[in-house]
Length: 279
Image (cartoon, rainbow, N blue to C red):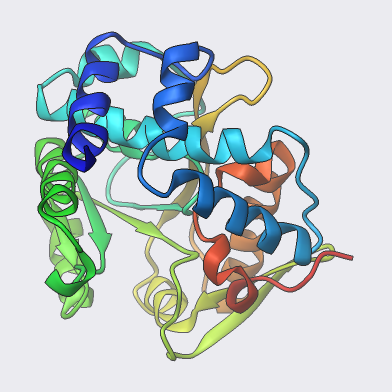
């Protein structure tokens, strides 16, 4: 049953082009292994930090993850063009070289597909999970689909020597894609502020952007909770020499995403280490 839910249902949903307003897709997202338990856990965490969920919060939370699974299958099947066709794009990417900065909000594979379509060679930067994280063959195969989707979009950079790989990618006319709200895992952070909203950002990333004078742009990719439409928002480009300014920009970027829908953020389980309670 786990293989059916983790692999077969997302594959079938992706073939049928189901969206977040489709009843079958919603049901499949809800019965995904542990989806209900994790959604309710994250809802409690969001409420404890002051981001009070509405009655449909948990439903949107599982739908965001389900979209990511379907997107992975569509990319593996070389259907990036179809995926992008269903995407409302606001803004445009700057000329290379630059770094695309996102967060764990929404489902971001369409961003990589769009970057590739624009000839910008995305390289997604991520921490590789140890094999012990995956408790079954179904989980391992699902992760293999996700990694294959990254490869189809342009490949990835794994943490551990990532600094040099990021610089090399920029020099090779590729575009590193980095999520600024990744947990610091004990490394130094800097607190960014946007009004009462705060976000702890890894200091190493901020220092790299400033030291190398790298151009960067913030993006977010999720779905409109009112219409269900997928949307990619691309901000304006920046170059900064002050880490605090970038940290504040990151906090403002995530605060605006939360204003749209806090349910689409995927890191509520570690939210207390990244955010301060809302006022």
